[in-house]
Image 1 (cartoon, helix red, strand yellow):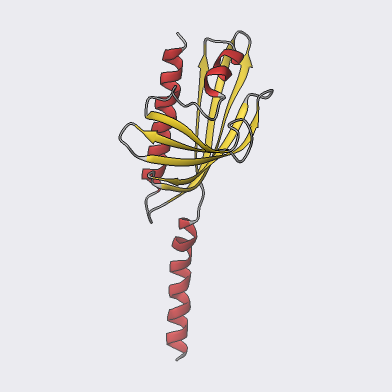
Image 2: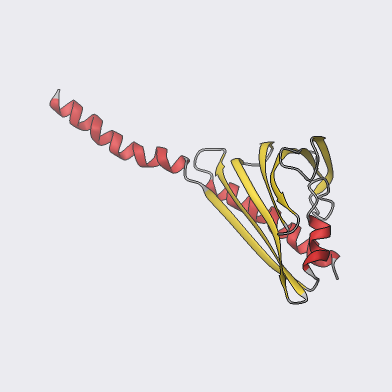
Length: 164
């Protein structure tokens, strides 16, 4: 009995770290400096009801609330037909910052929240897009990180191209 208990506890010690790893938050941060004033960039990306600047988004629809106030809900339809449901959690036009969370999506992530901000740098601006999330599928950190990194990079690249 003592050997069985010892083996069982030893097994728990091996299993426990992998269980905790599944709950480990992941994050992605992408930054770009643009040759445009911060106010111009914010006018393009600072509205929760318009993600037309992102090449992967076919349409943005506000389905509840005021697009400038926390609690607003939107559905992004991807060009491949997938849907992402998001809720605005904070928006500060003076600080040129908005935060949102995904409530339902086709992406391989869960418990996703992100902040998109614009900072002036002289006559230029810096856009920072940062997110924190967990993976949906066990043992698939890479798919989550790669997917969000790709979304951020393609959006910021398109934003840069659209401002020149």
